[in-house]
Image 1 (tube, rainbow, N blue to C red):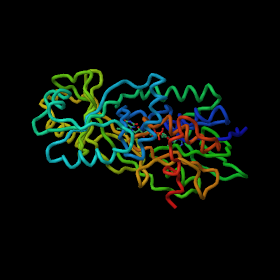
Image 2 (image 1 turned 180 degrees about the horizontal axis):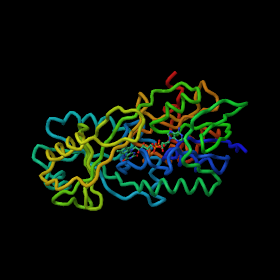
Image 3 (image 1 turned 90 degrees about the vertical axis):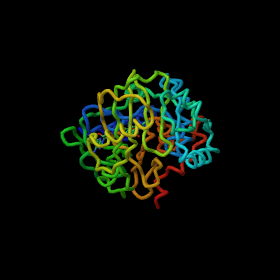
Length: 365
Ligand SMILES: Cc1cc2nc3c(=O)[nH]c(=O)nc-3n(C[C@H](O)[C@H](O)[C@H](O)COP(=O)(O)OP(=O)(O)OC[C@H]3O[C@@H](n4cnc5c(N)ncnc54)[C@H](O)[C@@H]3O)c2cc1C
């Protein structure tokens, strides 16, 4: 017999899992995931930081609003961040400071001696930085498991190896076909499919919003000297790299953004080599080995803001997509806000500062 749900969410990465947990106390929820393991795509491949400025000023409120929940659940550990710059990048430092001046984040301009202290071995051409002390590491797997467990304990059904293959309108809801994983009916269909968000929209007869996946590469390096455990997250103010320590090793990214079709993303040797070349221009440490490398897809709407809300033209179709490079650090507030929008509930202490119109699909006309 075909089961009937209030809400069917497509995709059990961070987006789908967090929203399922928020909806489950008030709705019969199906969380459907194409892969055998939830978290196999972007969610399982992140660099695991909570960085207040990441994503720009319009994402800051989502990140800040999520901070307390993450801290209360023991999922953040202090790291600190430094946006580093050469003399020629001074304009970028000032522009960055001005851009975030009214955003509520704590950022401070620091000079060469503070930089040397936080990043021993930094080459002489790096002359200044912006320090962001509140930056933290996130326990991504812990957060994802927290939401999956919470969703299940509140009655949501997780169906894995269940790829949505066909959708049709049936009465006031949807009839969903997952191939060999069966069928389901639901009143609301939530698109939490990450890089596949536009494909799900097209399947459901909604207008795709040009959610574009971009590949991002990370490699794990053995470096000499080994990075101190309290090394901050170090980012290039000009956007050419970031790196941070991870259990005595270094995670390094060239900050690449290569457009891609939705897929099981794999790292390119060239991107790893570019990252190492840029890294060697920052510090005098020796790269002893590339131990591991991976890539994932970060999916953005054209204005690079996330999309939360009902589609204005396709009844019963709810967008929860375009989480870009900030889908982990914004997950608690994003999921709470989306649940409120979907269920017609008022805002609460976590979401009261958020402007839902910024993220509404209706902004695309
Ligand atoms: C290298 C890298 C570093 C990052 N670093 C950070 C960071 O430090 N901090 C941060 O906050 N964010 C970071 N991000 C971004 C973050 O990982 C994403 O924003 C987040 O994981 C997106 O979650 P999601 O659930 O939308 O997507 P996904 O995790 O990709 O989940 C979407 C799911 O939908 C499923 N799906 C697709 N089609 C179907 C279908 N037809 N039927 C059923 N299921 C389907 C897929 O199998 C997939 O599991 C990083 C991303 C990358 C790639």
